[in-house]
Image (cartoon, rainbow, N blue to C red; front, top):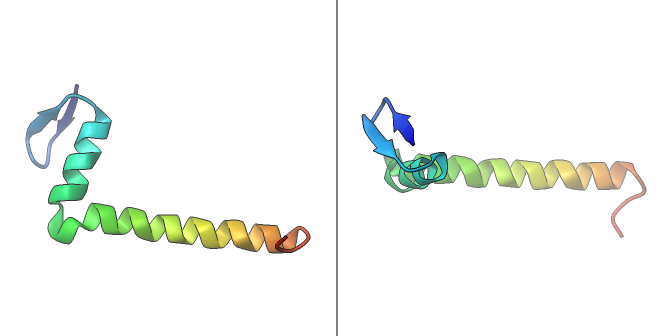
Length: 56
């Protein structure tokens, strides 16, 4: 069980909570933040690949 003090709701798991948060956040900000972080991570990986011998 996972309790969210902001919404004062119980969830079966942290995953269920994250799905709820992504779907119900302000402007679904949870999902937007996640997508932004994924883009940043992809850019960082590309930089690492370039630093170690370039893209193949």
